Length: 90
Image (cartoon, rainbow, N blue to C red):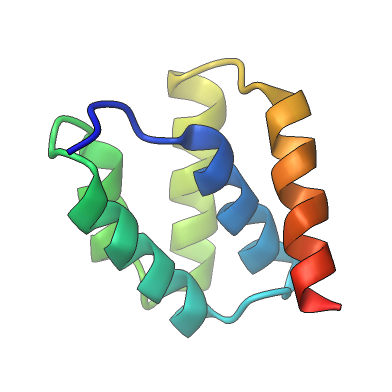
């Protein structure tokens, strides 16, 4: 198991969910994959599991965690992930 969550990928899923590129069900499937892939040292995954059925709560939880708790993301990495994700959609 990996020890650190790929926060840039989590942020990509967040942006995709927030903008409607993926549904809440698709997001939930991807979140389950994260939950199974990464070890349990990050409580954010458990917190997100509990609010998956509520889009507003999910986005609020991610906002709080990604920007208030972990600080800076590698936005160059996010940009590459985002462009590749959009290419797959279209």
